[in-house]
Amino acid sequence: MLIRYKKNLEKIAMGLLSFMPEEKKDVKKLQQTIKEYETNPDWHLFLWKEDDDILGAVGLKIEDEINAVIQHVSVNPSHRNNGIGKKMVIEVSNLYQEKYAVCASDEVQQFYTKCDDVDEQNG
Image (cartoon, rainbow, N blue to C red; front, top):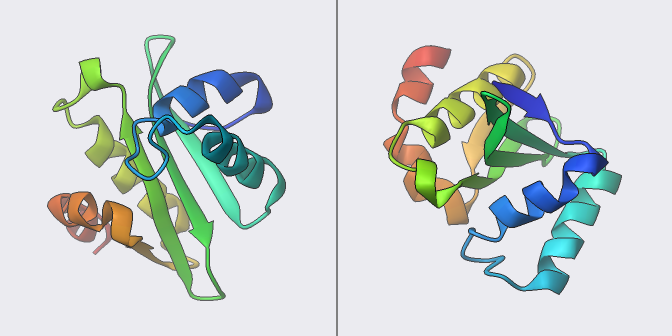
């Protein structure tokens, strides 16, 4: 289930985002990213929760009046290859599709393309 990020989940969110190559365990960069999600009204972070465990994170930013760009997709390594990333991308796309064209940043484009069901689900 997709849940909206809250400040009390900061450490979990930072841990998940640290698996993103561009964040790669750089604490200052991670803190900046989390702060941006907390303070910028155009940045939205969601977490994936199953059985009281948070297993993934997906973040997007509203770029303009038309585009919402998925910029972070991360799943706990011990839960990868179970379709969680794909579920997160589909659900976050469904949340924003009525108002925006949902696309992916360069960093997550390859994964986003693998989630070809996104287009089928949105179509």
